[in-house]
Image (cartoon, rainbow, N blue to C red; front, side):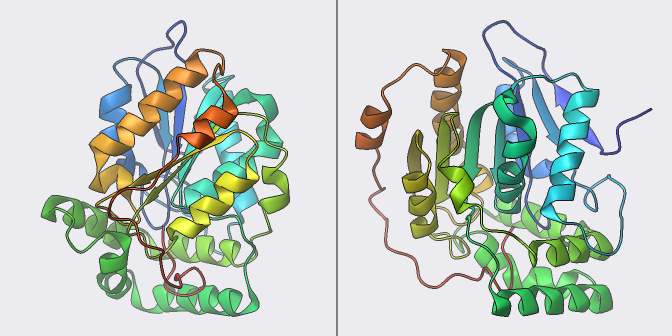
Length: 293
């Protein structure tokens, strides 16, 4: 039986090069990872799914909990016989990656969390997400996309990037996006589980991310036992698209470490962390309202 999710599976299993699995955010699709697919598929296997309700994957109205997304990812990797891998997710995709940890155990040889956060939903946030879900079902995606584009990417992002992000948002099925919003409204607290992560982790954030400011990445970094924090200047919520060269450089360094069986000094990694010249502490984010990827 064919996998439930639409996906791309590029590159080949290469000795000494662990596969890379990339999980997109809301309300995007797998083309969000185009720069990474192009950069890494020549040297390793890269699997990039469309989550249920997005892209070319089936739309299931109602509520899609993060646990359901995680089961879909697990089922796809089982179908593709991807036994061990680095798991990367951005924003909602990062929360799905966190949801995957208990399910996939030591199959996750490395964890990449980009522009995401681990806190549970608040009562106000739950109300806001459900209200936004109702709005998307009633109005469609365009008005929402127009409103949040200036926060999804930095205002100075290249026009081609802004157009790509806007196109992904307006192309997302409202039923799928609404189902994901209702699922995220019931999001648990992932912070206790972070301390139990044994795999090395890379935490990445755009210096000008308004949805998930640098302080959210600092929280993840502090809780993960073996993590590196990279703050990328000159971008907002989607550094992999806005600053692909810098994002890919950080990911390359991390993958090389994982390929080398996790060699490296954890304390040394932490001492090497730093912020870009343009870093400033972010303001209150929009987690419970407009909803970033």
